[in-house]
Length: 77
Picture 1: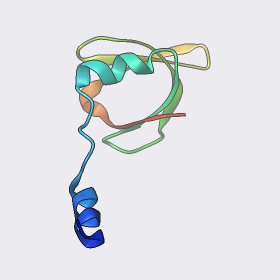
Picture 2: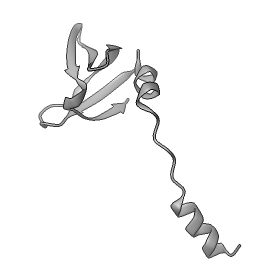
Picture 3: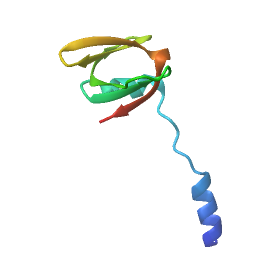
Picture 4: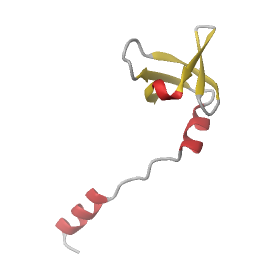
């Protein structure tokens, strides 16, 4: 294979996204930042638990419930 062909092949390789069932359990106990679809202040705290429809995040000794459909991004800190 030529160098150009190798570069082209690497460019088309993409890592498959994690299935939803394995992504969120990995976040339990970790500090995360949630950015919401509606904008506003991001929520930064420790992921405590989750259900099929919501996440519970502890921020400064308070627990917040965030519906999954309202989350735009999740960033692990």
